[in-house]
Structures are given as C-alpha cells and as structure tokens.
Amino acid sequence: MNDWKSRLNIVYSTNPDYQYELENHNEEQDTLPPAQQTLYVHLDRRAGNKSVTIVKGFVGSDDDLKELGKILKTKCGVGGTTKNGEILIQGDFRDKIVKLLANLGYKCKRSGG
Image (cartoon, rainbow, N blue to C red; front, side, top):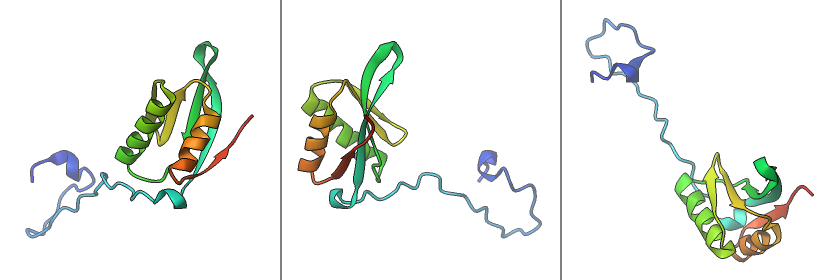
C-alpha cells in the first residue's frame, strides 16, 4: 500500500502490523421506492431568461437519478441534465412532470409560483 494520498492523515506508526483504515467515499445512498419519496417540482429562470423545470428531493443513487431524468426528458421531448441531486429539464413542464411522476408512483408537490 504505497498510495500516499490514501493515508494523508497518518504520519508515522511504530507498529509493524498497523493497517491503514481507508474511508470509503464511494458509498451511494440506497434508492427509496417511489411511494416513499416526495419530489418537489418548480420553475427557475436561468441566464438569457430561459425557463428550467427543476425536480428536487430525490433520495437514491446517481444512476437511478439519471434514469429518472432520462425518462422525464424523453416524455417531455426536450433536453436536460442531472446534477447535484437535481433533475433539470429545459422549459416549463411543471404540470406534465408532476403527472408523469405521479404515474410512476412518486409523491410530488409543485413548489414556487
């Protein structure tokens, strides 16, 4: 184990049997079933006065978030992205996304104006 970056907080140990304890930063959160999640859908204005529909509150892995984002983008027929635990969909699709999420079994609330 010569990866010095993985043991930055350990300077020296006189114990020849000492094992460095590595922290696991790759732990992903288990994805809750749709019925146990409450998602918040709201509209935001970005640069150039463009509308973006944002879905917040998803509890689960990044892969599952990306999959849900892909479904929403496909059903709305627009582009978007997933980042920082949020799904961003280009345009004002609040009503349509709330219906889609409800059909998928999610509890969702429309927030904002």
